Each structure stands twice: as C-alpha cells, then as structure tokens.
Image 1 (cartoon, rainbow, N blue to C red):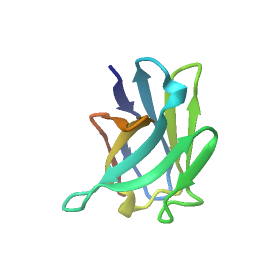
Image 2 (cartoon, rainbow, N blue to C red):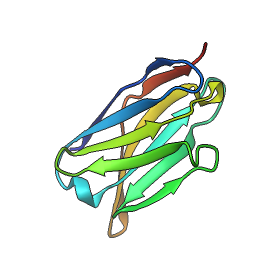
Image 3 (cartoon, rainbow, N blue to C red):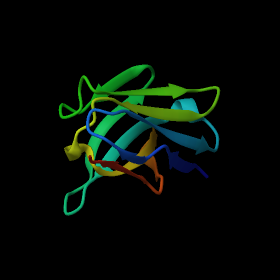
Length: 118
C-alpha cells in the first residue's frame, strides 16, 4: 500500500518561493508517475506538473515558475515554486500513478495549503 504525505506549504508573499515535498512510502517508487495538482476554493482540481522516467510536464499556467523533481534515494517528489502569485493560492495535492496491465494504481496525499498574500 502506498501512502503519500505532503509538506512545505504555508503563507508566502507575492514573488516569493516555496518548495513542496511529497514523501512516498511503499515499494517501487521509481515505477510511479508523480504529479502535483491543486485546488483553489470553488474551483476544480487542476493539474500542475508531472514527472516520470526523467520526463516532465508542466501546466502552462505555471511554466517557467514551477519545476518538479524526484529523489529516488529518498522516495520523495518535490515541487519548487518561484515567483508565486496570489492566483497560486490553493491546496496542493501529490499523486502517484502507475498502470499495470489493464489496472491503474492511483494514490493521493492529504494536501498542503499554499497561500500567496501580502
């Protein structure tokens, strides 16, 4: 069973930076695509970034400001967020996804709040 725990959220001023961490417990970390999503109040959950096998995908809304990475030795995924804007305020969720044959294993963390405000 996979468990994901996010950390690193908080209150930051516009233009500031935060680094979110997603600690993965379970086996086969490197076999999972790791992603970050976010959900602002009254909005649907939206994709932010994904990494798998060294390849990354970044949402257009954060491209050039956010980067995603993993440390396989620590079983941890990161989201480095720079030049933060008030519109980045949301709960950020970590996701681990793996397809095995016809089945999909999909896990979510509990989320961490990011608030960008002066």
